[in-house]
Image (cartoon, rainbow, N blue to C red):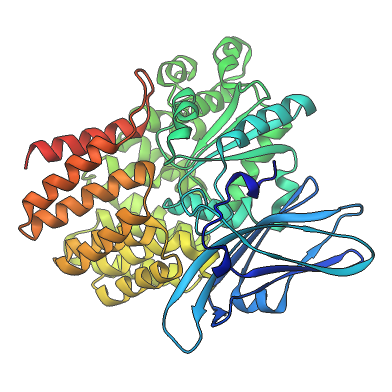
Length: 519
C-alpha cells in the first residue's frame, strides 16, 4: 500500500485541487490546479513530500513557486511520483482561506509528458500542517528493518509539531535537500511524540524532552543520543562523529579501565547527557579539569565554581553550559561578571539564533529594570536574521514572540503569533501559544477563542495541554462550571498508557485531574 493511500479520507474530494506532474527527460515539475472559485495563496507556505522510487524528496516553497511549478530531478528509471502536497487555497475576491493536504500518485511514461490527478484528502490529524508529515508507527519499524538489512544506523527523531527546536531541526537539516548526503548513512524515522502510538518507543528509550535524537543499530541498541537541537553545525558534527564509530552507551562503563582520562571524561559526558548519572559519576576521572570533565560535573551537580572554571577554560563552548546558569539561582558578583563577559563574547561569535539565546540568559539573570532591554536585543538579533520564509522560520516564532512581549513590544509579539496562526490554521501550535499570551495579558475573550481553536486542532498529548489552558481561561472568565464539564469530558475521553509505560501523557492527565479536583 502506498504512503498516501494509508492516510486518505475520501470526503470532500470534489473541493480539492488537481495535482499535475510534468516531465521532460530528467527534469520534472509539480503544479496544482485549484477548484473553481479559489486560487493558491501566493505568499503562504507550500510543502511537497515526494517519493521517486526509493528516493524521498521534500520541497518547502511558497504558493507563488507552486504556481510556476515545483522543480525536481527525476532519477533514471522512475515510473511514478507519489506523495503529499500541503498548500493554502483562498476564495477568489474574498477573505476566506483554508489549508489542504492532498495525496497523489502520478505515473511517468515516455521521455516527455504530463499526468494529472484529483488530489485525495489526507487526514488532518495524521498530517502535520507544516508538512512533511510526522512518521506513522510503521516508519520506525521500517527504519530498523532497513538498517538491519544494510548494516547501517537508525536516526530516531522524537519530535512534536509545536516544538520550536524540532521545527528548526526539520527545516535546517532533515528536510533540507542540501543535507541529503549527511543523512544518507542513516535510516531516519520521525516519531510524533503527541500521538499515542509513540508511547512504546518513548518508554523504551526513556524520552522526556523534545527533540530527542537517538542513533541506534538495526536491533535498536543505542549508540548515542542528543537531547535538544544545538544548531545545524553542531548537530551535523555529532552525526559525523557517531558515523565514524562510537562505542554504544551500554559499553562505555565496561571499557572505562582501558580509556585515557580524556576519553573517560568524554564518555562520562555522553552518559551524563543521556541521564545515566551513576555510570557517569563512576567513569569521570577524579581531579581532571578539562572541558568535558567540567561539563560533566556541571550536568551532574551544578555549582558556581564549575561554571566559572568553564568560562575561563572553554569560552568557545559557552552554548553548552549557558543554560545551566539558570539553575544556579543568584551568583556572586564575581561569578555573575565572569559569566556576563563570556556570554557577551559568545553573542558576538555564535550564529544569531544562538546569540539570541545567550542574550535571553543574560536577561533572565539581570535585575528587573534591565530585563526588557536585553530581551529586546535578543528579539532584534533573532528577527533581523530570519529568512522571510515562514516554513523555515516557524521554529523561531514562539520564542521570538515571547521575547518581544517580555521586552514590552506586546503588539508586535502578538502580530507574529497571529501571522503564524493564520498560516497554520489547522494546527494546535500557534493557537495554543496565542491563548497563553492573551491569558497572561488578561485579554480573556480573545484567549478563549484561541484556546477553542487549539482544542479543536489538537490531538494526543497536545490536546490535553489545550484542554487545561481552555479550562484556566474559563475559570478566569468566571465560568467555572463550564471548565469542570470540559475537563470531565477530556479526562473521560483520554487514552491512557498501560501500566509501566513511562511517558508524558501520564503527567498531563495527572495535571488535568489535579486542576479539576481543585475547582
